[in-house]
Length: 69
Image (cartoon, rainbow, N blue to C red; front, side, top):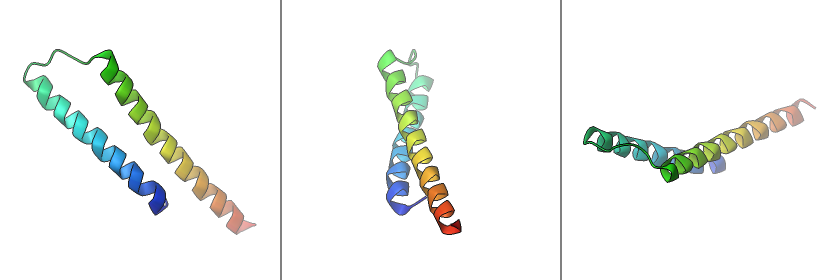
């Protein structure tokens, strides 16, 4: 993965993991569950991470096939 794609992906991943960690501690204190908005935000975050990974893999494959030619 190139540094220009890796940095935003790592920042996003760090934010998602800190949010998940915070929610787990909140549940231990008696939080009753997740709201629809939280599920949508988590889903959009996962889609964003998947998009970054697909873009990085596509870029790597394209560069490699250009090297082979």
